[in-house]
Length: 136
Image (cartoon, rainbow, N blue to C red; front, side, top):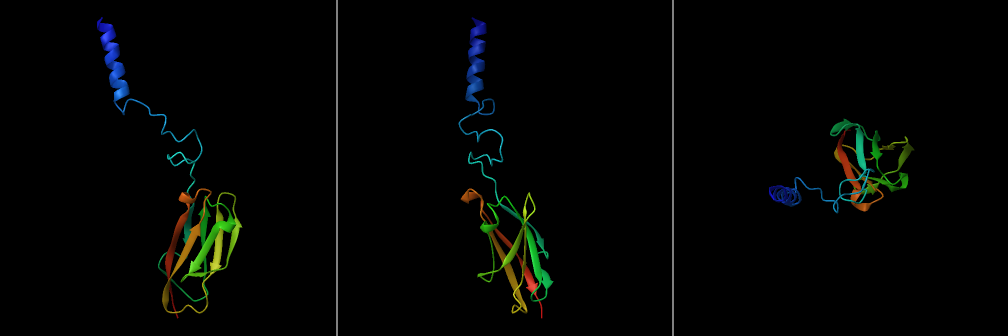
């Protein structure tokens, strides 16, 4: 009799306590690059900004950055002062290396290089950038 009560108590505690039970419906699946939300989301990431944030540069200077997790080179967009900027994109197997130049007519100002990188799932898109001080 005591063994049955003990077993019933353990089962009640085990299934009633979230720390002791495993909830399978919210599991995002097996393996993959999931973000835990079940969508298999691989977030796009923008990194390796060159020149560094808030660096002082000359008009027409080159800049570069890396994008990983993007849906492809056609899904990476760069702008400065809300104007699209032409860039070259190199596929480096695990990321894309993006290179461009500041417009020559930008002088004595601070500019933001804005980057949008679309991923396969729209909620995983990246939207970032950095500031540069343009001299002369």
